[in-house]
Length: 282
Image: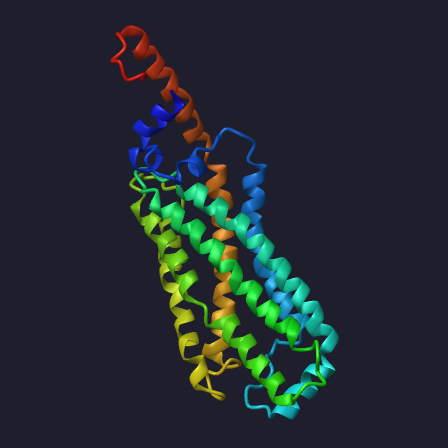
């Protein structure tokens, strides 16, 4: 009965033809603490990611134009910090998944939103975790055997920054899908403020210079440059915190929808009691 009720409320989202339905069929009237925790995970992920770079002495980053010997000496000097940064960066990845799952659940509340939208949110979140994990693993290898050939250490340093900054497509898709969902909300009182849609459309544009980072060792496009590192890092962390805060407000606004979800099944039960069965079990 509840499935039938939700299907009538939002046939695109709650239809049993979608494999994603079991994830979306949640009890919004349940305690919200776990959702608030999921929203806070976005901020935790951002803050931990920032401190992982601080611990590894990568704020400001190592210079791309260093010789292999200079690069090796730099890591030898900051060996302990690099190892600590690995642990913190891996921990920051842990918190990104709960944030994405909570965002997908709240996005699914938007009326007439297609199931592919929250599904894309989850897919992007699952793949986005590797943007944290893979650079952390490369960073773990760098100080592990500093007695190696310095050119290998320099190559690993290059790989660390390329994998840290260049995997922007996942986050652009996630942000633009979120913006699309907000703009599709037809209500006068939207679940998310429409301003967040434009913020999520415009902010990822700052990720695009990272696409050219492999073409420069100096200047604004290098991995220590204004466009190649600083704008990307500040926008990414700032946007994650902003989305996390808006997500908390969306969770707090669930009360009216809870009432609707409780009333619709009762109304359908009353209608079914007054009319003969149509033979479909509804």
